[in-house]
Amino acid sequence: MTTSVKMLEADKHRLDRLQGELMAKYGERIPQQLLLSWVMDLAEAERDRLGPDAFRPMTQRELERLHRLCVRTGKRSREEDIDRDIAKTFR
Image (cartoon, rainbow, N blue to C red; front, side, top):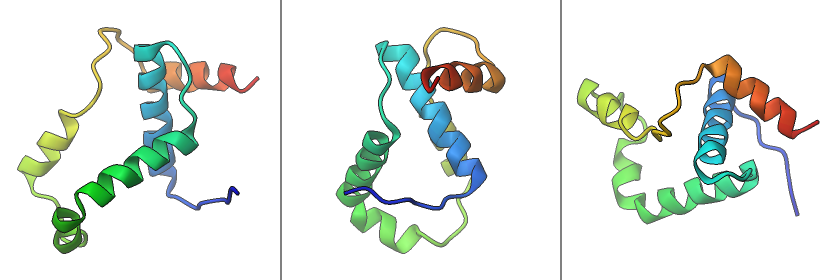
């Protein structure tokens, strides 16, 4: 069974970017449904850490650590290029 999920436009772009980066790294398209399942698995595994911090602003250090989690593929790309490549997948 599937259902729709409403999300912020910025979060949708982040999900699209993650999907594109993983596609570039592994050479195959990973469905967003699977990506969201992975995110949920990670959140459940870190539930104790996630709960108390869920509504406080992130510190600058935490933001920097989060940005370092980006996947490095060795290829330079622009968000527009990623959007174009993802759009090709759905044609």
